[in-house]
Length: 123
Length: 131
Image (cartoon, rainbow over all chains, first blue to last red; front, side, top):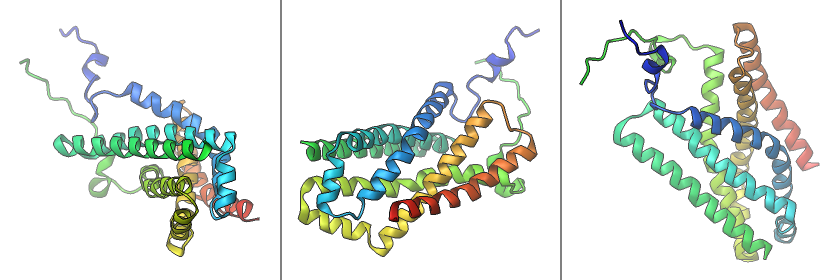
């Protein structure tokens, strides 16, 4: 007779071996993005192609600047963690590790560059 | 090391090309992954645009010329559709995660809503932004 429970036997058997918190992060960030994206698409869509002065005026106002920063941070965290789910499903070993690192690096570089630009525009 | 008992596990749907007939629910689900990853191109362009805006008017002209060129517009338009598809698909998975809409009829209906809804939302966005 085995005393181990079904749950205990199942834990760690998925392609990622772990991930309830990861999945929960995706749910929380997706709800946040669902609220932010429509407004951000409208703001950015109007700023794109409006010329230097108009774009600068838009991006130095508090609401567009703060919203863009939030969309960038939450969006890129959602991107690299979401991409990781895909990487863990299709790859293993060194390929998996390198791809995860590349996704994380890309996301943090985008966040850092975007925030630098936003601060420079606002000041 | 304890001898692990071999357990018969169900076939992963990721094998659908070889063993699995393509279904609407599977295709609409994998499209979320494709759209989500494809948006990295739009992110790169957006960050370039922001850095150019911070760098000054001359450099901004160059960046915006590329981003609003034919190819740039094509990428932006495609990414707009991708973001709306990803948006609706994500909402569909929030419904699934809540344990609702999992019967075949409702799941397929939600899939079609993602396909048609993303096109409608893309056209609406273009109309609202350009007017």
